[in-house]
Image (cartoon, rainbow, N blue to C red; front, side):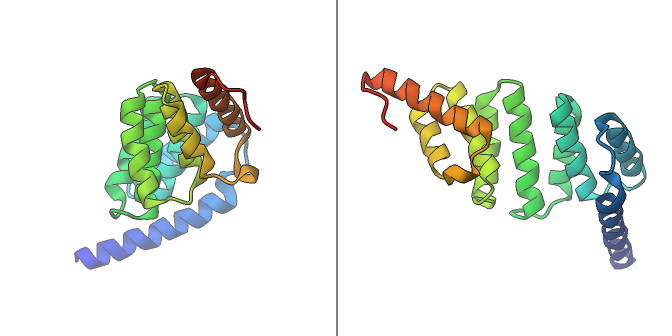
Length: 176
């Protein structure tokens, strides 16, 4: 019986993934997307991609509590060391970072980085947490792992700021 239930959940999750990709993102209204996702997740709480999408939307709209809840739901639904597990840890780290709790953020972000080292957004968020801790040297190292053409605008600004702070700390001229 459990095998049948598991297979049914996988099938429903796959159908929801396709549905979300085809219709869920047509609107740019975050509030309606959030409401839409919440109504789907009430009926199908095992849909991992739904929790991931909801967490991303909630972080972007500043609803950290909802993002945190969806991050934990995604983590519970994920296989350890999987893509979804890394995404869940990344979301949780971002939630703590948005709250200014850089120590907790670093714990989650480092775990996410260990699972998914090629996701450059993790490096940027790690650098942000390190900058909050005033460890500019480590922030520079985190940002240096990202090819310059892949750095976001925020990452480039953080890189320049960290270089400036390091130069000021070392009393050396800024090198480009």
